[in-house]
Amino acid sequence: MARRIAIASPMGVAGETVSQAAVRGPSWDGRSTVLVLFLPPALLLFTLFVVLPIGEAAWYSGFNWNGFGRPTNWIGFDNYRFVLETRAFWLALRNNGLIIAVSLAIQLPLALTLALMLAERFRGAVALRMLFFMPYILAEIATGLIFSFVYDGDYGLVASIWRTFGAEPPHLLASTDTAMLAVLIVIVWKYFGFHMMLFIAALQSLDKSLIEAARIDGATRSQALRHVVIPLLYPTIRLSVFFAIVGSLQLFDLVMPLTRGGPADSSNTMVSFLYNNGISRMRVGYGSAIGVILFVICVTFAFTYKRWFMRDE
Amino acid sequence: MSNAEITRTPFDPAVLFKAAFLAVVAVFVLVPLLATLLGGFKSLGELRVNPFGLPRHWEWQNYADILFSGRYWQLLRNSLIISTLTVILTLITASMAAFTFAHVKFYGSSMLLSYLTLGLLFPAATAVLPLFIKVRDLGLLDTYFGVALPQVAFSLAMSVLLLRRFFKDIPHELLEAALVDGCSYIKFFRYVTLPLSRPILATVGTITFVNSWNAYLLPLVMLNTDALYPWPLGIMIYQGEYSSEWHLILAFITLTILPTIILFLLAQKHIVAGLTAGAVKG
Image (cartoon, rainbow over all chains, first blue to last red; front, side, top):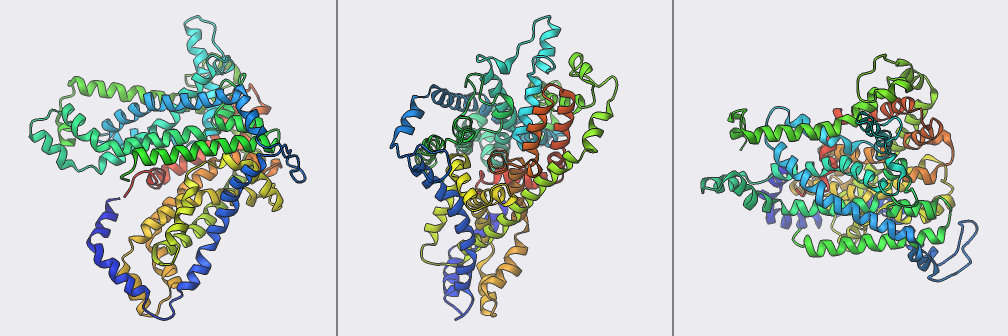
């Protein structure tokens, strides 16, 4: 990251003007060949597998269709009405809200605290960073399975702790009261390290002289932290919040091995709701309607957030 | 700041608190992982009474049975094929596009770039049903490409942005000089840009690989044949078959996450850089 700045800044404006002349330079340099050969593969793949399906989702969502033959049974906006009338949809939306709340209230402060501790150099700091980051690179499926063992009422770690206190072990994942809570704990376990790394990267690129200046001017460590370091981290904090929210809207793989969204839809996320109700039953119209709603939420959120909080970036 | 930290006395309460806090978090992270690894060495009966501790009797058989079964290797092979396809295609298409956006000025360039970055705004899941129908209509259902191509498409936005940022930093004087000497854009791309960009190619390749290696939803929707399943699908089926024989499931989990952990230890620099790269500007 520092490297880029070192290379980019000395060239500055001069480099730009020269390059424009160069582009117009020789008569044949293969510029059009590049345009014709280099862009289409990416654009084609992107259009075919990302953009068109979103458009088609909007189209299919007007049909009652099981995916075979061509869609013919046009029902207008009924699919959207069905989705909004489903209790499980609102539960899923609530759960996504819960995930975001936990990310903001627990995960983010935890990640920031750890980053402040581990950004300094001491023996073991790097090893701890790597350890805390490790859950993030494990597959969500594997993480979910590991924790379905941890929570298992007969063999699991939680059950064993309960038994040492002589209590009847709970089946956390099988109860509508505790299933979502159990999922939330796994989410924190898996993702805090990622956010910590974001903060560490930001802390390491901070201008240390600002902190030293504050210290020389008589600020205590905690004052320097509160009035200098944290404000300098605001852009990273906003980014971390952004990732937490986007991540919550995508969460699926982790839920499947743990609860499949159950019991009684109590731990569905938007995507697992989409999977359970649209994909696994091939209800293309209904599932597409859920997809479109999720798409609208994601895009609205991304634009609003960028506009309100990340204007300068 | 770091010097002050080192010269402190070990009896400083702040340092003690810090050590205790880090220890608690370390235990929180480690215990589930270690219990999984060790659980694979226990018998089911021992697992029930002793899920935390070291095995009293090491059951190597659990691991050996999985390692000598064709199943485990087939899952890894499928995952490797899909991930490798995804990485290669992503690197080729994204680096070509990124090069064009970085070095060729043409009408509509910034518009097309914004078009590609739309892909960052929503998850693949939103359009997975129409995607399934598209892949089916193309005849790619139940093939490696049916999984790999959509994965490439969804990883393009981030990859192009990261690569373009790096390509733009290659001094323009170099391109100018090369063009004056009669080198074409394509040769410049092949002989200058790509060799100079190994770090970022490694980073983008690593993110794409990890994402594809761990992916569950797309393979789940696109594949029907057991023989083609990547390991996340395979392990879910394994768990379904051995529902409460946790010692076997834990051994299987350990063996399937082992490649990821080895890769992580070997390439941690690229993985950390890559997975936090989209985030940190610079």
